[in-house]
Image 1: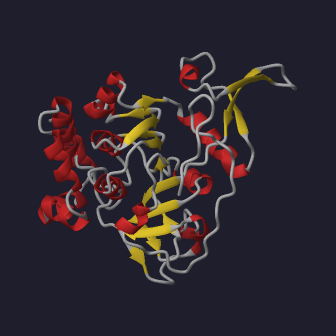
Image 2: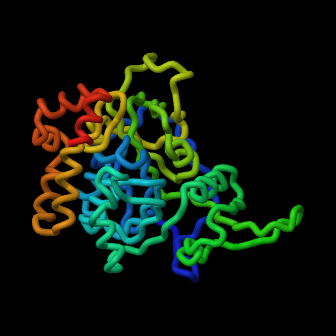
Image 3: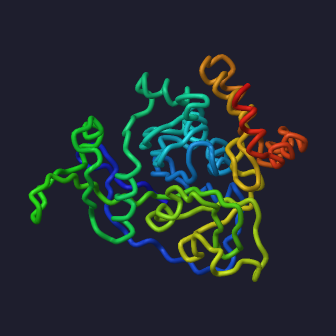
Length: 320
């Protein structure tokens, strides 16, 4: 999986492409095998959003395999982007927001990397990114949008163009099609063939699946043949390239309805990442040797506590 070349403006080229079809009956691979094909410099779409259903097991494996110069694409994300930046894996961030909302604020490693120029910022908006993915799905080179006209976002995206609509005379922005090299998604369930079950909201996961050149899905559980009904499938098998069983694969983000987000772990991360004092040790602890070691370090009691979430407990936690 190779990243596309850069155009004269230094931005990744965004040509539309046909999503490969894979009808293999068994796509189950190990975490290391799934990530091995993600090249340095790849354009990587991250599924989920904010602190919900982030593909953290796949992100941790990217850190273990010491990927570099990744171009991250997503709607609005949190510790997945922040951890990859802190681990030195990122060259470009193309997101609308990276942080923990009103709870814990802007992600600290992200903020520092942008302020120092260690990572290139190409801030976007969710609607524009959605339009770009749809253009790739439809096999067309661009999609017209209105949202960022008049904003300074245009300064970060010289690949955008403006055009006068031939029907109305309105000025429109033309956003080029976006086909990420790979999409990393986390699901509550999938079967070996790659049929995927996602809880709502889907965020951009379905669009990523149809627009990306390769789709890797980590999942809380792999279902036996026949367990999954056709009307339960969110993403069909033929667009998925690999499936990895990864229990608690979104932690410390949530994966509802299975478990809540781990506010304690996120709070600890923000505190340390803001100080830079013990950041390397914290990254090593978060990544661990493998996912089994990661879960063991958390402890079964903590994991069961997250599974026993309810709305009242979360509200009280936020009020402390």
